[in-house]
Structure formats: structure tokens, C-alpha cells
Image (cartoon, rainbow, N blue to C red; front, side, top):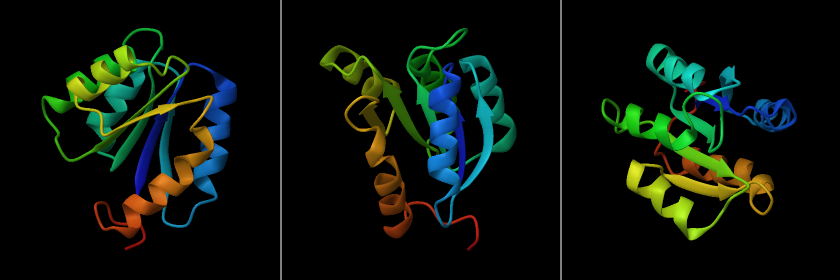
Length: 128
């Protein structure tokens, strides 16, 4: 699975990267520090999945999801936020997010979730 990660926090971005590169079948193809960069990477690199922060400079995660969904219905989109409430959850799902996770409560569940996506065949490993 080819993944783009985007977060304006270098700490979160580095932690996500470390988490994902240790997984079999996952390749982080781009690390982005803002939404504009993430959208460009989604257009250019055509990954299987993007993990996006909700609050970023330029375009926020929900804006990126709205834009990419105009062209691509297949890419899996995960929105991460410290503001995990029903308001943002509804915005994310309405925009076309596949997953909405709290950074404070769900962050450590990301590898398990991605492994399940690969295992259930919705996305193939990049090594397939």
C-alpha cells in the first residue's frame, strides 16, 4: 500500500512515518507539512491511501478530501484530529473521508487499521 501522510506537526509526521515504515506492505511515498502540498502529492503520486491532519496551513484535511474526491473515489482517506467530535466527524464523512480518528485516542490503532485494509483486499500491498 502506497501512503501519503500530511501533518503540520513535525512530531506527529515523524511518528506516523516511523509507525508506517515498520509495517510489511506499506510504503510512505510522501510526507507533507500542509494541505496544499498533500493535494499536489495526491494528484501526482496517486497513492492508495492518504492520512491527513484536519488542521493544517493552506488547505485543511477536509478541504483536501473534498478536492480529491472530485476526481478519485478509490483512494482511502483518513482524517486525524485532536478535535474528535461529532461536528468534525460529520464534516469529514460528508466530504468523503473513509476514516476519522482522534490523535489522542486512536493514534496507536492506525497500523492495525491499515493492516486490516490490506488483509481484506480493499487495497493491495505495494509488494504484490
